[in-house]
Length: 282
Ligand SMILES: [Zn+2]
Image (cartoon, rainbow, N blue to C red):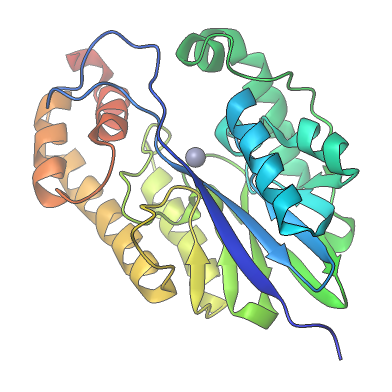
């Protein structure tokens, strides 16, 4: 009998971005909270979606150390730097193997290339060295004390080439940014048929019939109920698609979405989406 598994989530608090302009609602531009998940057996553990900054990476490393588990693998669900920039350092600290899909590894390289104009501009001096050290997970499986954790590729969701980690023994999907939980969704890559493809990615997760979903960005006050995360992420996409057809400028889109989703954290992320979707109007 394999040992029972458990999971824990570390939520890294929102940090300010190096952006002077305020969000139209008066907020300072902040980065959304980040979810980092530790799946543990009796002795070993797997970390999913290591965080972004030097400070967050140290905090997560100390959290893993305090768990007393032996970290064997680190997995990144997708290539956006906020979900892996600290991965190489944590892999070295714990002697763990850093794995991802080939598509994610390619996206990691693109994120490293855009560091100077994007990540370092938002967080000057705060991002660690970002050599892409992740390797492909063999047969798309991560072994944890006799359990198979399955890497599932889902294609485009909030960016290209995304994946999730399915932990069948826990009825758990660690979904990266395929699902959101109480935080405004990243729609900067949603133009064209991006929203349709995102729905198709969610279809793949839903077919796994998970009970729990950890989302890459969550409001830490909320639980990990899978059905709610799926329904709410889809509702947000549907509203965005409808308003994209109705609105003709960034501010109109922002205000209408904010009115529909007043409880979601980080309207600044919504403003980021709006300015990308209506670039000619800002
Ligand atoms: Zn993200």
